Amino acid sequence: MPKVVLAYSGGLDTSIIIPWLKENYGYDVIAMAADLGQGEELEPVREKAFASGAAGVYIEDVKEEFIREYIFPYLKSGAIYEGKYLLGTSVARPLIAKRLVAVAEAEGAVAVAHGATGKGNDQVRFELTVKALNPDLKIIAPWREWDIRSREQAIDYAKERGIPVPVTKDRPYSMDRNIWHLSHEGGDLEDPGNAPPDDLYLMGVTPEQAPDKPTYVELEFEEGTPVRLDGQAVGPVELLERLNEIGGANGVGIVDMVENRLVGMKSRGVYETPGGTILVAAHRELELLTLDRATLHYKDQMALRYAELVYDGMWFAPLREALDAFINVTQKTVTGRVRLKLYKGNCVPAGAWSPYSLYNQDLATFEEDEIYNQKDAEGFINLFGLPLKIQALMRKKAGLK
Image (cartoon, rainbow, N blue to C red; front, side, top):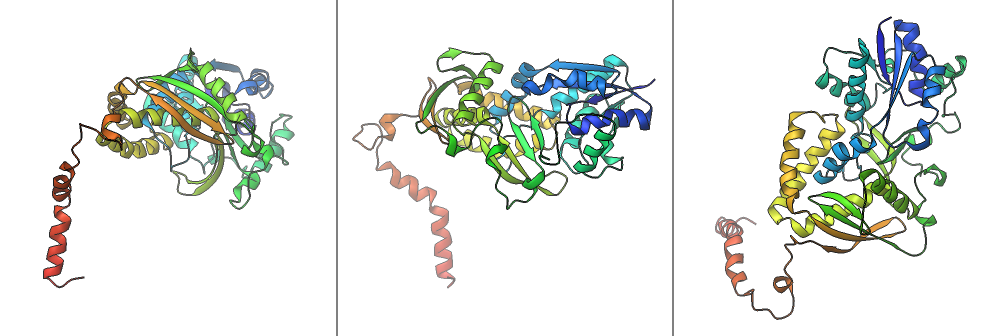
């Protein structure tokens, strides 16, 4: 039989896609699950996939590749989508799709499939990656084909076929988890007027439930990449796991936002990114210390475009690769230590040090110094403000207000 490789998570959508593909396409279904740090969620995946009718199952541990090749380059970019979202789902999809293509090629499959809906962003992210890496593969998106139109109908479809799913009509949230974040959508969250319930969070506590005294963490970076935590050299996986634990315990990294989807509609999501929030804050403090004004400001402009590229699924686009080349040049001096204070959801700087620091206390001091001649400022202001002065003189001469 022809084969199709399905991006499989063990959740509601992909669980019912296995029998649907067999019934409607007659394909043998190979389930591929990427271990991005979902934790216990992956333990029953193999058995569940076979029970759902899969002809084969791949479970691939790609946590370290995910962090080194996707998270760390994204971290160095400083990109934040619409000022709030740390792109936890967006940055993971290209790697999942890359592994999907690799398994399809190894199995000689004619097609790949995914469980993204026709309303969301993930369909774009998966399919753009497949097109970039193997344009000969057929792409099947059941949500754009089948008659199922709601999560409730999907739950009923699963029950009819005896497929257990981790979603119930009492807790109908759509969740995506990896080592960087956890997202929540759907259910009562679809109304932006509803505050998230306190029992929604799975990676940490609410700020109100956090300890009454602060926790301090110290991170060390080398050329924009975090390498030590509290003075101890740690690998990327252990680093994020420990930061998630510390940040989650202090209520750090909860984001509630209405965002603009690529497909044209707004959606409401609640995100937990405890470790990522700490890393982003620390990296930013070090850049403020080590990058000159022109480079920092231009990089900030570029970060807006970088965030859109990642959000839109354009990870393998030439522009993203070109921007990474620029970013890596800016990071050559982003080396040093940053201490942060975590307290009831807040993550604030508590010290930064770098051998490449551009901060000069002798220049910046409000006390007496022998380096900076304050009289020089008058000429600078006169030249810098000359266009404004000329404009004002013209308006006065022309009788304009």
